[in-house]
Length: 252
Image (cartoon, rainbow, N blue to C red; front, side, top):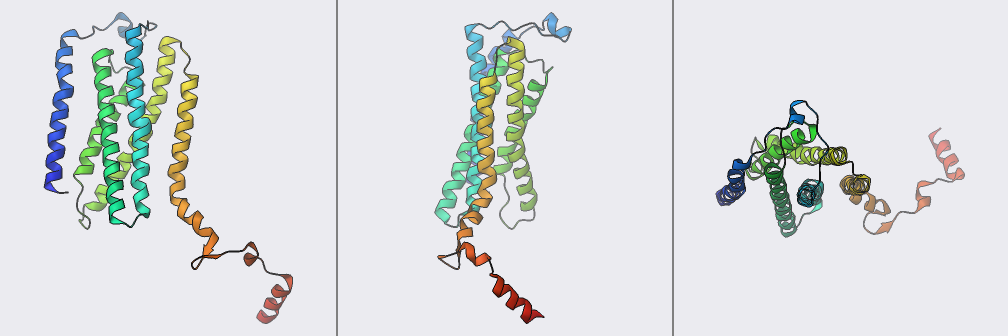
């Protein structure tokens, strides 16, 4: 990776951390005190005010937009480059991938900061614990991406495997946690989330189909042609009885 790219990334990361940590310093004066329900391991039914409902909705939207939509789209974009030979198009796809993924990281970070400031975070349930792991991995992944070795380097294969593993694992873990979050919201508020679950499932199915179909698209398109533009006829694969008998006779 070029030194100017590393410098730009490090400056951007420091600037982002200053912006994101400033509200946390201010909010430390207003920490939530553990409630009696936390001590007993049980939660009281959540009383939704208009402000709290807005905060929950914004948190859910940010996490959906980042992990549930942009990250899978970024993966699909970079996979498209496997079939592209034009240098300009490769650059466009690569930088589109970087922009989409960094936007997803920023949105996820904003969602994390929002939850830390406004919600009680005792990390005593699966949703919060899984979210903490996802937030940590989300910031490790771009660091790995920007610190990639040059092609031909010995560490390139290890880097590629780690980048692919995290790049695939983070969206999967994040999507699972979105389902857990919807279930937790329904438990705490007694409000139905069936519609959002169905819509989100439909989106996940569509993205998964596109992801799996990408590798088969070129192969599928080539099924109708051989040696240029010559079309394959269905009868080309069928042999008449007479020809089969002739072939058997010649073999015997």
